[in-house]
Amino acid sequence: MNMTHSVQGTGAQSAEDTVLARYRLADQRRRRWDAILQDAYRYTLPEFEAGDGADEASRGSDRRTALFDSTGADALDEKAARTHGQLFPPFQHWMSIQDPKGDDSLGGGPEGAQMEAMVEQARAAAVERFHDALDISNFHTEIAPALREAYVSLGCININFGSPENPLSFEAVPVSRVVPEEAPDGIPRTVFIKQQVRLRDIALRYPTARLPERLEREKQRDPDQNVDVLEASLWVPGDAATGQGAHVDWSVWLLQDGEAILRDRLESERTIAFRVDKAPGEVMGRGPVLKALPEIKTANKIVELVLKNASIAVSGIWQAEDDGVLNPANIRLAPGTIIPKAVGSAGLTPLEAPGRFDVSELILGDLQQRIRTAIKGPDLPPASDGVRTAFELGERRADQTAVEIPQTLRLLNECYDRLVRRCLHILSHHSMAGSRYYIEPVQVDDRRIRLVPTSPMVRVQDEIAARNSFNGVTAVAQFAGPEQVARSVKMDDFARWWLTQSGFPPDLIRTPDEVAALDLEQQAGVAALTDAAGAVIGDGTAPYE
Image (cartoon, rainbow, N blue to C red; front, side, top):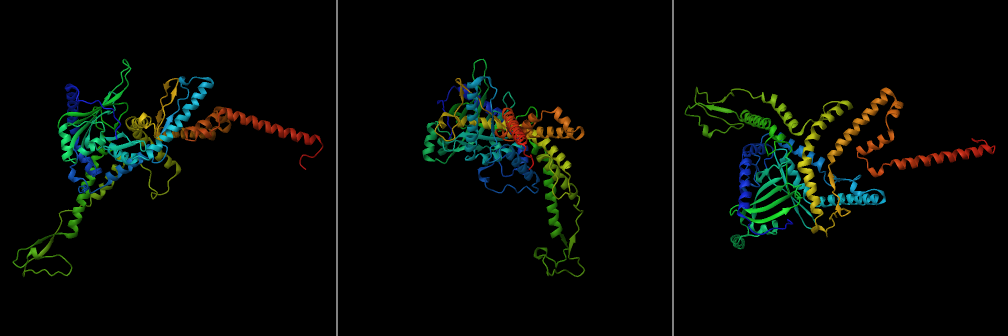
């Protein structure tokens, strides 16, 4: 269910012409990608829709008939699954909210500390309810295909209002239906989606939509009839001069009639279109699959020719002499078969193949390795590849991280941040006030504190920085000695920083005040023991009896 507040009526004709004309122009640019996307999907995502969309009758059929080598498809599945686990690990707390400590709006003194504690409590509750709502939704089912498509060109997912019992509803949109436009900030925020919807489902999908009388009559006569609709999400940037914030003008159109059945203004982005990589001047993405497409097609053709050559080698090609006795139509090549021939005739003889195809083995393995590296990035050596030193494994892992982290971090602005903000907007909407997943806005002095989400990939970078710093301290201790480290490094502060960067729970790390109190307590204990020992010795009692 979409929670919308529609503005009924067809509106001005010029506005309708602008939206539909803008869609047609963007669709012309989008259709130039159909050929290359069909090629890429044929060899890596054969079950997915590509190009201008799969025919309804072909759904459920075998679409892997042209696939002979699945190296590209397997590498894409592994890469998307790895990214899924890095950014959105299922049933784990992968999102944290930045603590606005030090914000001037919180003030100082006891009141500021009280406000800070309130914000911290709200932050922890928001994180918990966010993940609880996500775990009961269909998020992990829908984000997986969207990530696969992003590594080809463009991934797209809709985030809709659900019910108070299940507030979040996700829908992965096939790239064949998506027509994106870039916003001034370079992110594809304006998105047109062409859908086929049954008349009976329009009221469920768009609760506030108003159908024309013609379609109302068609709905009564044939509720299962499909109609083509266009969902237009037009990004409107904020205007500092007028104080108007950024928003999305969302509308739903009947393509056959050119009439809007719903208009709405959304405060967050319902449709999230994202890319892993792109070329300058292009809106659609160019993921690693498109870059490796020549190798993927070559490997697929080599395997196809190898199989054809193998079938010829097994069954052979035969020639028969027309001697009036041999009838090729009646010959069955089987063990024990007697084939008649005329006297002096060559009869049935095998035709020798013109050449051998053994050269394919020389390049197929290299092609498959290049495909895996292009899509997945550098990989660690297999366990069966002999004994490896810890230094070599560390260097291999560093190379892998140097390629993988920047590639994954590109998804933060276009996917992660926008997705989390949309979910937080839904969970904090007044329509969810009765839900156990409702996130109540934090107010300080009549101002709402903005909760900023952070990604687990940022934590990975922090862990790398902590590991590098630890290696530096260890190296100094080896060649200069621990005394030099103690003189040069604030070890107490370094220990707290290192634990924080490594992901250690902050509430388990002692603060400087707690450390000072612990030192005083230890000093007092030592002083008490010293006084007690002095009193015993003063009594003339041997101290070690």
